[in-house]
Every structure is written in structure tokens, then in C-alpha cells.
Image (cartoon, rainbow, N blue to C red; front, side):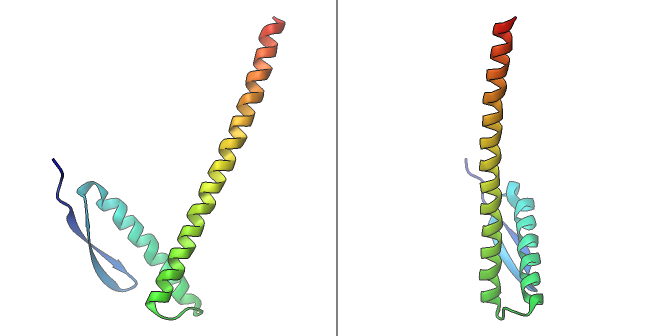
Length: 99
């Protein structure tokens, strides 16, 4: 049985938007809207980008860039942890063989 989405009102750059989402995602949606609003206000305050649509596109690009950068760092960290695990396993294996 699927749940009917509810409508949530969010404010982004002084405009109200009604967005349908499941009840369990309401808080996440509001958090995402606050983050987007903050990024758009930051871009608008810079005075370098004009027009809501252009500001939205720049905010989307910045947020996407940040997300991809974090994902890349996560991949690097996972690789480093894997290499460290292999070295530890090898060292522990050698020390167990010595005993």
C-alpha cells in the first residue's frame, strides 16, 4: 500500500513553493530548501549574477560541485582505508606466523 504524498510549503528566495513529498521526507525537504535558499541568497548578494533563474542554475551547479567533491573525497578515503587494512592484515599475518 503506497502512501499519498502530502504538500509541503517551502520558501526559496522570497517565493513560496508547494512541493509534494511523502510524510517521512518532509524534514529532509525543508532542510534541502533552506540549503538552496542560503546558496541562492549568497549568490544574489555577490552581485555578479542577476535573475532568479540564473541564480538558481548557479546554486545548482555549486551544490552539485560540492556533492561531487565530497563523493570523490569519500572514494579516496575508502581507497586509503582499504590500503591500510591490507597492510594491517599483512602485518598481523606476519606477526602471527612469527609466534
